[in-house]
Length: 235
Image (tube, rainbow, N blue to C red):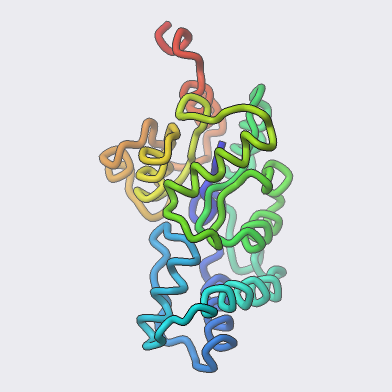
């Protein structure tokens, strides 16, 4: 089970922008004028576009330096996450309910770098439900579909079970999440709580679309239905 983080489980956009502005200043010596929109993309991609739209020609060391500075800037602000951000409706109850399903392990498939993903979920007490060792994160320079396959490989290595579309579920709020699941090899639950409307998620190919996570029973039923053996699904 792979959760998107931003606008699926939490919304900490204010702190994220401030951390990006600080990291940009540290790396370039200039104030940030324009931050590239996230749109479900990984931090590595956002960094390159942010440099470009601010007139900075990216060099080989820019990405590692920026991501390192972003991690520091975010950690410095971690106590503000709960104050200036919010947990998405039903997120904790949904994570807790899914954790009770037999054989389910929950991790994240996120554009956020790993250290910041941990901070985001810890701020709202969500980290206890997540195995951070088998996720996919924004410092890895892969398209999200490839990142999904990387996460599946990590899960196989750690858990000894092959992961395929039959036993991998992605939950996310954007059409990019849906596309990653379709291409990378996973079932997909779209949540219309963030970047994309329900109709857009369905059109992109989500197997199930929920308005939000506020009904934990619906979330559990969706996960269980998408991972049921074929003979159960047929029945």
